[in-house]
Amino acid sequence: MVEVSLCGAFPRSEELVEITRAVDRGRASQAELEQALRRDAEATVALQKQSGLDPVVDGQLSWQDLFRPFSELFTGIQLGSLTRWFDNNTFYRKPIVTGEITFRGSRIDHYFREGLLPEGSLKKAILPGPFTFAVMSQNTAFHSFHELVDSIAHALKDAVSELRRVGYSTFQFNEPSLVSRGISKDELKVARNAFETCARSAGGKTVLQTYFGDAGQIIAGLLEFPVDRIGVDFYATSIEAVSGLDFGKELGCGCVDGRNSLLESPEELKKLVARVRQDLSPKELSLNPNCDLDFLPYPVAVKKVRLLSEARKVVV
Image 1 (cartoon, rainbow, N blue to C red):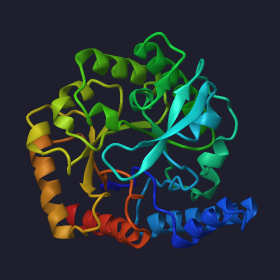
Image 2: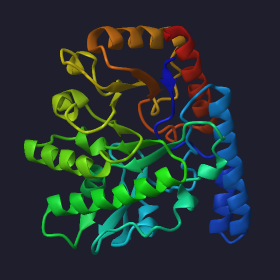
Image 3: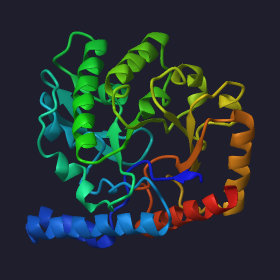
């Protein structure tokens, strides 16, 4: 059976968006917001289960961006200015690194809602990769980029240990910065060393998820990382760019476009997956969007999830 899962944040419903705005204007309470967040999370989980997705995620609905929760979960991180998120019309708060980065060991249940995920399901935690976290931050505390990445990796390692303790078994590290720009051999080595820290001893399945760029330029290096699966955005990477290698790992096939409202057809996905299998011969194959779905309107994201379910039926 081909695994199908989400690989990032899910959009908020219109109701949740309105309540969030009302809280900002002082017209609704935090309790009302929490109830709406819970309803949305439960609906997101139900959609995944109805569509046969496994492992399941909670949708990261309480995350304003990929890094903001870690200003609470980690020491040494403060929130900075709004900054454009790659080439998207969205923004994130730039983390400002002010001191040694460590995992606080608290509040993790606010951002990783394991209690909403069904009993008996595989549970996936999505985290920022250490390299992308460092690249997208403002460093005011460490003497070198290598030291910054290493400190983040150790904090992520401790967070993963806690997530494993509460029931998560798959740990995905999102690393768009590895492929969104040119990366040197030294930087790739720094990233690989960080994964030796945060991923090798995770105690579950580990995923290095790339998107927003061509993974072909560094795929040979990524295959040396101590992870079980490499996720590739096949809307930014051609199959030819990553073929011709002994893949030797599981491949996360980013076959549904999370930045385009146009719906792919199951037949299109069947052809893409067939080519991926033939040209790459991965150890195992999983199907997922190429990135977060929260760039899309909520109804379109729902349709994309159901499309993934349909795709699995025609590619098995």
